Amino acid sequence: MNPLVAQLNQNIQTGNEHVYQMLSLLGKEIYFPKEGILSQSAEAGKLAKKYNATIGIATEGSGPMHLQVIQEKLSAYSPKDLYPYAPPAGKPELRSVWRDKMLKENPSLAGKSFSLPVVTNALTHGLSIVADLFTDEGDAVIYPDKNWENYELTFGIRRHARLVNYPLFTEDHRFNSEGLREALLAQKEYGKAIVVLNFPNNPTGYTPGAEEGKAIVAAIQEAAEAGINVVVVTDDAYFGLFFEDSLHESLFGQLAGLHPRILPVKVDGATKEEYVWGFRVGFITFASENQDVLNALEQKTLGIIRATISSGPHPSQTFVLEALKSPDFEQQKKEKFQIMKGRANKVKALLDSGKYKDVWSYYPFNSGYFMCLKLNGLSAERLRIHLLEQYGVGTIALGEHDLRIAFSCIEEEYLEDLYDIVYRGAQDLLNA
Image (cartoon, rainbow, N blue to C red; front, side):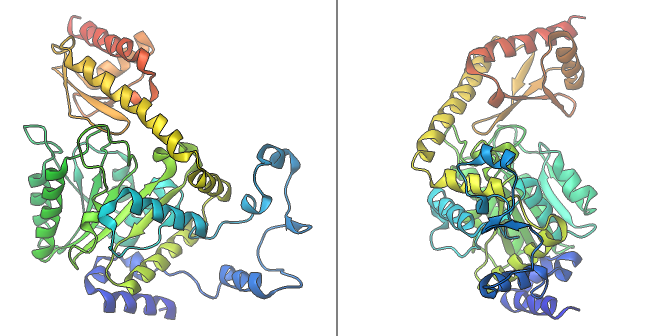
């Protein structure tokens, strides 16, 4: 075993034996080389004052070589902030600014012990890192029946996890914390579970209220007290898009420091929050009372990054950092939030008007990009195809009777026409 691996594992075991038990075989074996090309290049960057012939980029004059046809389109930025490799953990200032943002937006994190966020290639990459670090074949990964389909690929196909689903909603349309509790306690014989919490939820656009949040945390705590090691992943892809009286913070804050057998992991990013989907800038953050555990988990995360993508794109990290530092950022983001809230409110008003009630009901939504219709006796896939072929309208069929509609990408003035068309298409099939 590489001495670095042995030291990292020892630090985790000494700091929190339960966290060590949560690691997958890969998680236990991975490390970030201290004596490799990157570390030697970093050392040369500080000390090689005459010639630095280490890292694999080309230079010209005093900066990185580049093509003018590219730089002329990016002239607002210095070449040094665009063309060289970004550090595997991401731009240091971006990591620091994002941590400050997390503290500002999540007051429950005040006084809690958590790591400096590591930059990922957006949220899917962050979830993939979690899967690699903590999931072995047969480990239970628990998330609700209404979910983002990529969880199956990330945890099920890539890591051969045992996927455990529970109904998202109770009969009175509240978050099913009892279902989560039962799914967790069923893992007692295995002693380990990975829980994925995704709020606002994709596909339903639902975020629990404060009391529901307490019940979720209580269920996880009960599992820990029953001897189950629980990795809790808060997939906060749509964080901040809270339109009604729901939780307005990530549950990461309430989970941090809750119990030695609970390891909270926050996966978030600029992707959806700052409307920069193609920039692919995300973050992964760990919470632990022990600093050695946090440092070791960061080093293992960097090992995964080094072994897969090496480092994230530098230009998009620079773009996001400069945006976050801009004095206009908050106001511009607030303006976009109001547009999104207006669309959500418009959809809810349409659905509550009663004009469509003979064809569908809808699942609760109060946040995010999406909402889901629950069709009455009609195949969602049949309706999806019919809408596409006969009306040129695209929707997403989920399961037998659920149809997801992204109001995020439809201007408010066209929403009524959209839902009228969906209704008309449903009537076509019901009356055929």
